[in-house]
Amino acid sequence: MTHARLDAWIDAHFDEQVRFLQELVRVPTDTPPGNNAPHAERTAELLAAMGYAAERHAVPAADVQAYGLQSITNLIVRRPFGAGGPTIALNAHGDVVPPGEGWTHDPYGGEVVDGKLYGRASAVSKSDFSTFTFATRALEALGAPLKGGVELHFTYDEEFGGELGPGWLLKQGLTKPDLLIAAGFSYQVVTAHNGCLQMEVTLHGLASHAAYPHTGVDALQAATKLLAALYAHNEVLKTRRSQVEGITHPYLNVGRIEGGSNTNVVPGKVVLKLDRRMIPEEDVHAVEAEVRALIAQAVAGCPGIRLEIKRLLLADSLKPQGGNQGLVEALQRHGQAVFGEPIPTSGTPLYTDVRLYGAAGVPAVIYGAGPRTVLESNAKRADEHLVLEDLRRATKVVARTLFDLLG
Image (cartoon, rainbow, N blue to C red; front, side, top):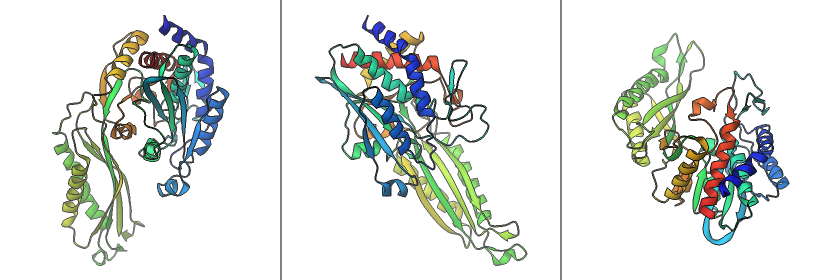
């Protein structure tokens, strides 16, 4: 009967929830450039209108700018209940990659068409600002005796690794929840994810006129040897299989190449940016050492080339945990009841800032509003969207789960 009352409250307030999400989508949070404090301020205003006071935790400007961003204000809303229960944090990130080209809907319009809400971050993960907020409101509307508390963590650094989002809140001692649900999709409970190493590799040669190539040192020729070695290494990585469902093997990708100055100039400098995904079974420091050695060996046979390697990101994986079983079981139970199908557990090849909660000893799961896959939502692509019925049902699942664990 209690679960039915939660569902009924969410149904009665769903139009308000959709309007809340539309307002969040209409404030851009493109990262880069990462000027995200205005979105936090708007979110805090909208929450205040619901009676929720949001603590504004501004990351020092020098730290943000050194990170390559412009402004970050992370939000915490604390809703304490009676003594004796766990504090459950609900985390979603507001920062998102720029919209890019090819949109047929305004990326900042929040337009609803045929039961879908369109806009950048509508699915990942401003949607779960609304999922988590309205699940918490539904829980409180019951007026039932509850033990523990809920914290809403709305952060703005997931696209750059999370160190100035959840990582910063945790290191500052501003929060230490007992359990965490982080933004995800509705049809699976994610309990593990890959790690990620990103590096910038610069090959310094010597530029010269193309008519006199012997007077220069061609950095691009060295880069082609390096690229061949990196991509050949993927054949080795395919043999390293993960035991986590949903995760297959590590992979190395070169995502960006810059070099040269003109068509009639021997390239004197080439810069590569690479991304090495790490399965949960791998040690991040061993992986970095392996990649550095592979690069050095490939370039060693190129006379006159000076090598420079810079780490951009080293994000550990989220490994399967033992302390999250209560969360997992409740989400699966209510997910099946609300969606009418089994909700499996799995890992994901993505990396997320949930790993930072895990590293702080907080048992965590990834669950929220959205489709079965990232591709279905068009996240990070044109016409990103959210099926509103998935939003409604995911909100019910989260509200029911909170009640089971706090009631």
